[in-house]
Image 1: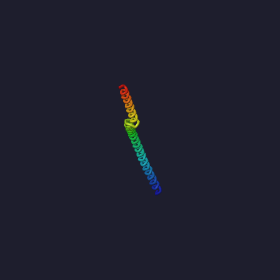
Image 2 (image 1 turned 45 degrees about the horizontal axis):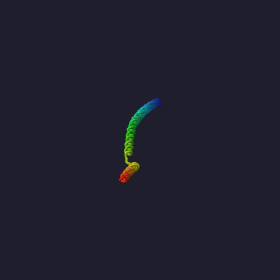
Image 3 (image 1 turned 90 degrees about the horizontal axis):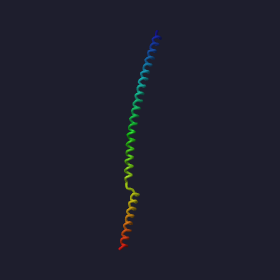
Image 4 (image 1 turned 180 degrees about the horizontal axis):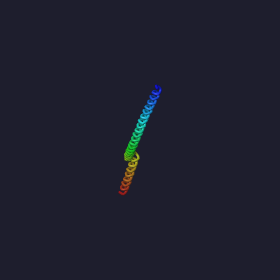
Length: 102
């Protein structure tokens, strides 16, 4: 009889152990699903944040390009000086022509 009680106790312990393992497994599965859901939500939020940042960076790039295109450069100055020299030469020729007529 004593061995039958031991067998019953062992069976009860096994059942309890199996039930505990099942509960732990269920808790772990729920935890994994929750973590996957959180990961998905975080990834989606990060994707939308990246899209917003991309638009802002493109806007800043355009602003910087416009700002650098509006600058007065050395080549612009050279063109302006050449135009002034041409105008001076034209005026000198006119003055010379008027003096020659006198």
